[in-house]
Length: 420
Ligand code: RNT
Ligand code: ZN
Image 1 (cartoon, protein in one colour):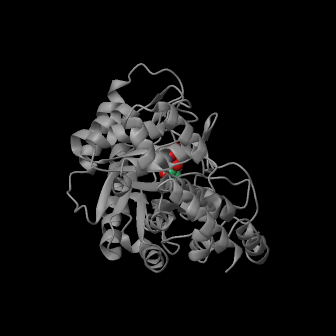
Image 2: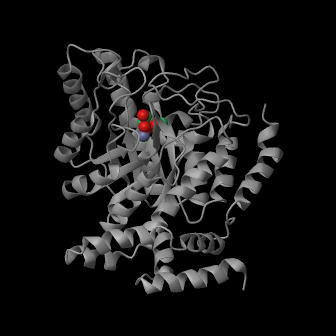
Image 3: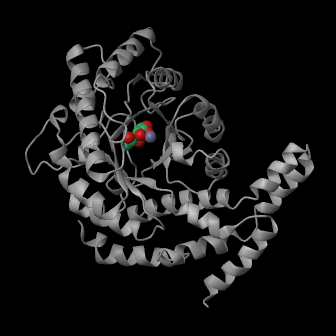
């Protein structure tokens, strides 16, 4: 028996003393899929054209670490490498600007499922499903920062058509892959400085969304989500699609609300929102990210906030109603490593939540023994969870501990370094 298994056996006994079945927990963990965002691999560049407009929307990646994927094949290769470092079966989250049009310029409002055929095939081989996003930024028609809520009906209609096209692509992907595609709409619309009219753009956005969602698509193929934001770079004073706006919209129209962990006031807890919104909504989408000061998209780490989110999902039995997507982009470190760190952290957080001595904590709470509740929460923090995690990785044939870093460095030397 190797050391990893030996350590697991001991850890399993320790957890059993607290009434936790670690075998059961790792089985449950293997059933959770995380949606990996394609855009970490190329700093949100996409493949529309080499001279694509790469800014706008306040979501530009910073850093110039060498080796960024330049083509869809390179991106898929990097994603494959990432998946090899991550235990479990996961999903791919694609943006429409990663279409493969084979040199032909296709306007975003004319995109079709065929432009994503290679992605869908690849997903079938490598992932458990595909999620999708209209790209309402990095485009001349988004240059002034407004899209679906634009005052110009021509521009508004272009983005409405784009979102409709994306829902159809989502539907086709969901049908082919046998797993519903979550198509998430995020728009950058907002003002840097104080607006006079906060109402008008919101009325236009509501109307535009109604048009986007006119056609009913079967939920076993496509699920619609909308993503709010408090502010962005260049939209500090006003964002049309605020939390209250989309909360209202999703409740009224039974859509999925997307909560991005970087899109709230820095002291707000996203974990605390989950049980509130899921009291009224059927399902939600999470964009797990890490806000640092004004940036909302640092690589996810095993922070208290991440742990709290995972705890809420497990404690509330919300995993079946929550689609977990990642949303960060860092161009200052190896991109495959960034993906791997963020995804492994998300899975670790879920594992920690699943091996929490839940019953005992609930009993303490129910009997009003808040002293023991706090004491056990603290004692739980350094139970030997690392041994469970290592064993989980080993069981799933992915590198244990820092071994994955060595593998990613090899990949960097062999593949990434050759991209100039
Ligand atoms: C931007 C949103 C959005 C994007 C991706 C690329 O603030 O978080 O989700 O990051 O769609
Ligand atoms: Zn997001």
